[in-house]
Length: 110
Length: 117
Image (cartoon, rainbow over all chains, first blue to last red; front, side, top):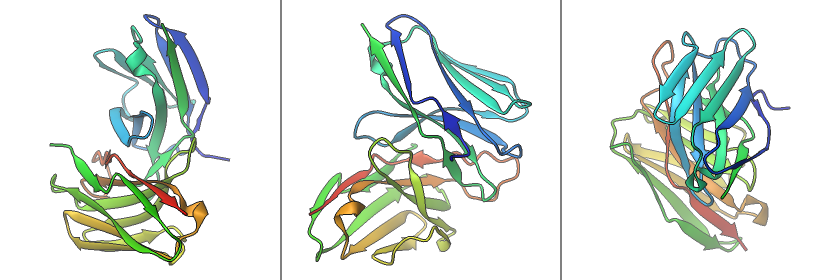
């Protein structure tokens, strides 16, 4: 199986908060990333967190990191229909290359 | 400027054709990557260039041939592809791959959607 795991689907109502979860296995990962991919497009870097932090906030986005449990989450406040996309969690592997989870498809209903 | 530009956006090619995908960045990044992404799957790493030298080739068939003419450009030459090679091909770049505590976030292009017929 994959070393970075995410649930595949999440559906929320517009205006609600979305929480996308991710678990990773490489305890030596120094940086962890969230990317957003809209249909037919490339990956857009949303945010990242350094492993010595446990929280990072950037406007509507909040990243929480539990290093002990190797658990990463992305919270999107006031979710909008334009947030509908696939969200990939990623870690840097031993070669400092990106290793991606399977992606979580977020659907925002009006 | 955090832009990685890929051309063409779409490509349809026959199994006997030869074509090339191009990628360009002007962020001064010294690491460049090719990823392949099938539908509903995460990107899979194909090749990594670091300081214009190929440093990783993830057991990719020889019908895919990467080239890094200079630090800003990355090509992927395609020859005798199979229909199962149809996918979104993503280019990415990062500052370098030296690691440590340096953030080497990767910036992605919009991809080339390749269809092999």
